[in-house]
Amino acid sequence: MFPTEVLIHDDILTQNFRILKQYYANCSLAPVIKSDGYGHGLIETARAFVRGGAERVTVFRLEEALQLRQAGYDGMVWLLLGPLPDEADMAADVGDNHRFACPSLEAAQALSRAAQRAGRTFHLHLKVDTGMGRLGVLPEQAPELARAIMQLPGLQLHGVFTHCAIAGQPEHPVTQLQVAAFRDMLPKLPSCCRENHLAASSALLNQLCPELPFARPGICLYCPCKLPGCDTPLQGAMTLRTKLISVKELPEGHNVSYNCIHTLRRPSKVAIAPLGYADGYPRELSNRGTALIHGRRVPILGTVCMSMIMLDVTDIPETVSTGDEAVFLGRQGEQEITIWELAGLVPTTPHVPLCLFGSLGTARRIHL
Image 1: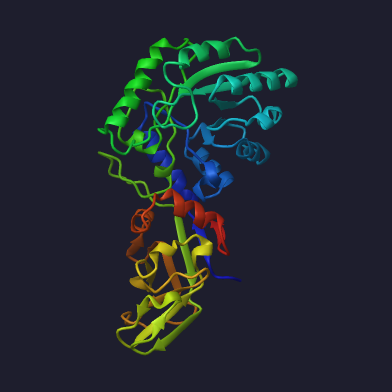
Image 2 (image 1 turned 60 degrees about the horizontal axis):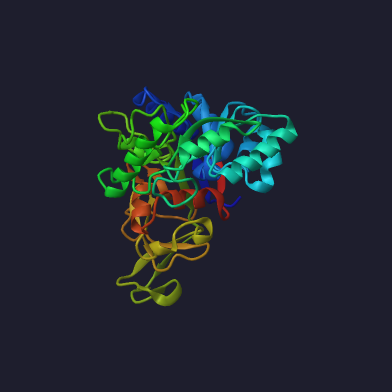
C-alpha cells in the first residue's frame, strides 16, 4: 500500500470546538466546514464539531449542504454562497433547517420562485458588502432590500452578515470602517434580522463586534491557536506523513533534483520521500522546507518534485533506513512542524496547504 498518508485527528477537532465554545460562551458558533472541511473531510468535521456541541455548521455551496443531508446530518446548515440561479429548485432538498446567503434582490426573487414551486419556505441571511468587494449589497442598500425580501412569498429573512478583509489587523482603517458600517446599519434593519454575524476566525479572536449573537469560526479550529487568557490552546488536527523509499550515500559535489539548485557540500546521506507538489506540498519549499525523521528536523534538498522530495539525513546519529517515517506536517517525538510554520515559509495562508493536503494526490486520508 502506498505509504503517504494524511491523518486527521477527529478528537482534536472536537476538543478545539469545545474549547472555543466555552471561551466564547456568550456567542453561538457556526463552525465553517466548507471546501471539504479545509481538507479535513466535510462529513467527518461536521460530526466532530457536533460531538463538541455545535448546533449548526457553515458550508459554502449547496452541494456541500446536500452531502451533509445525505450523510444523515439534520442540524442547522448555513450556506455562505446560497443556491446559484440554476440550483434554486434543488434548494428544497436541503430541508427546512437552513440559512441561505442572499447577496441581491435578483437572487431573492429566484429563490422566491423556487420556494413557491416547491411549496416550501426558504430561510435567508442577507449578505452585506462592507468593504470586501465580493458578494453582497452595500450597507446603505441593505435595509431597503431586507424589507423587499420580506414581501417576497416563500422567503423568511432572519439576519444579515458581512466579512472583513483585514480582520487580523483590528486597528487597520479598513477594518474599523467595515465594523462601523455594519454597526451603523443594524438599527435600520427590520426586527426580524436577529441572526446577525460578522466574525470569522480572525475577527472572533480580535473581538470585532463581540456584541453580535453569532460567529462563524473556520481556520482557527484546524490550526494551532492560542486564545487570550486561556491556558488550553487549540491544536492542529492534520498530520502529513510518509515512509522513506530510498536512503543512499552521495559524494560531495553531487547535484540534487531538477535544475541543480542544490549541490552537496560534503559527502551526504540522502533519503527519498514519496511526496511532492502533486500531493499539495508547496514547490516553493524547494531547498527551504524541513521534515521530521527520528524526531529530528532534516532539510529538503533541491527542488520539490511532483511526487518525490529529497532529504539530508546525514546528521541523524541513528541509522536511517527505507521504511522509516517522515513527517512533513505535524508532530514526531518532541518536534512539530505546524501549518503556520509551513505556510509562513511559502508564504501563503494556512488554508491553502491544508485544503491541498486533504484533497490532492496519492495520499490516503485517514481519520483517527
